[in-house]
Amino acid sequence: TKDGKALIYNSRGLLYRFDLADRRPVVVNTGFATSNNNDHVLSFDGRTIAISHHSADDHDASIVYTVSIGGGTPRRVTALGPSYLHGWSPDGRFLVYTGERNGEFDVYRIPVDGGEEMRLTNTPGLDDGPEYSPDGKYIYFNSVRSGTMQLWRMRADASAQEQLTSDQYNNWFPHLSPDGQWIAFLSFMNDVAPGDHPFYKHVYLRVMSTQEGGRSARVVAYVYGGQGTINVPSWSPDSRRLAFVSNTDLRRLP
Image 1: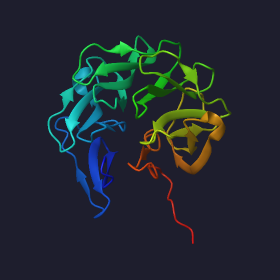
Image 2: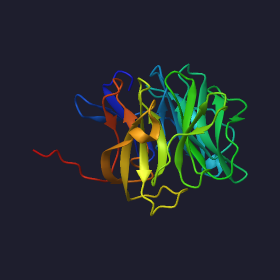
Image 3: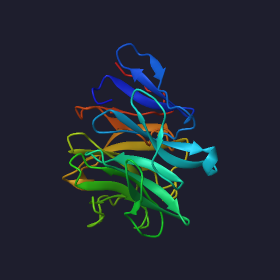
Image 4: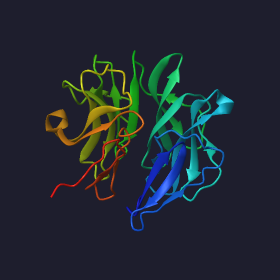
């Protein structure tokens, strides 16, 4: 959360607020949306959560909604699905997500109150994981367009798309620190196909500088996770810590 006092996490389609002081999880009321994906995103002002709910009315496709941080009835944002939410603009006006349209996965932007979606990428293969920089100038994402999955960024208007990483790993899901200095991301080994991010695989959680790019990348955790678990790390408000979910039993050594 924006005040750093709680974590918001997903379990079996429901959202929970976990208070770090008393260590007690409490269900966040998301109304009819009880089949939520793990890619919920808090608005920069901390008042609203955007969610991806798999709706039976839409053939179980993922649809983006927003709901108050205190709970309530979700408000639909995307008309089309599947739409997999990933980012919120700092000014609170737009959401960015990966949409599958006519068999192609690309990055899209839409006003937070709904309306016409804007396609931001248009290349063969998967573009995924879009997230705004804290200053709103850039959108970071991952793309397989180079042959392997690598991190990219573009200006908020979709211009100047540039590749940031180029190494032996398949790199996914860039998450910007609140101070804009660091990117946390997930790296699969090369035994995983470039466009795949499967369950139950050993993966690296890495961090790199936004100024120095891929050459500054370093490993901060090596854990057993993958799709649905470690792909959604979140930064603490002071940019000093990362919270993530993993299937690994972590222990602090003496």
